Amino acid sequence: MSRRDALDAEIRALDGAGLEDLRALWRARFGSPPKLRSVELLRLLVAWRVQTAALGGLDRETKARLARRGPVEPEGRRFGLGAILSRTWQGRRIEVVVEPDGFRWEGEIYPSLSAVARGVTGTRWNGPRFFGLRDATS
Image 1 (cartoon, rainbow, N blue to C red):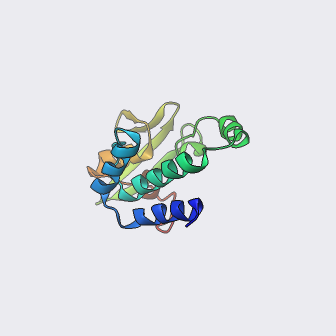
Image 2 (image 1 turned 90 degrees about the horizontal axis):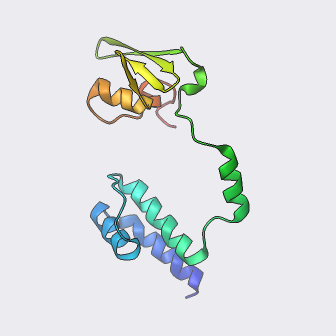
Image 3 (image 1 turned 180 degrees about the vertical axis):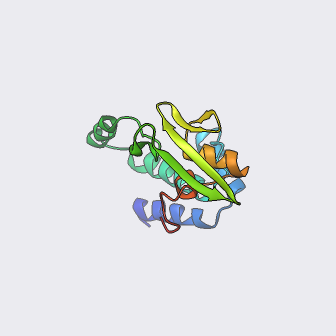
């Protein structure tokens, strides 16, 4: 088995791993695991780290291109300051105003639409999807 085949097999073996298995693997290889509860996201991170350790990380050109992009802007900011995003949830009209520092809802500023959605519902939501900026399949 080639080195590449062994790496591919190691990555494929992650498919059946649960959250605690992935955390244990991370801890054994890389130290304290990230505080993620998403099995899929942690699986992808472990796979990335395993591949990076075996093959190297991003090349200089890719790092430079990523650095030129600047910080990631929260989804929903593209509508511009003062834009109002709204939806009705459980019979209640929810309106959010795009502000320079985030999204205003009921007098408070939230850093993301997901934070607003969590404030509204009390549970985790994808904020852009909650406000209809994404369809259910994206």
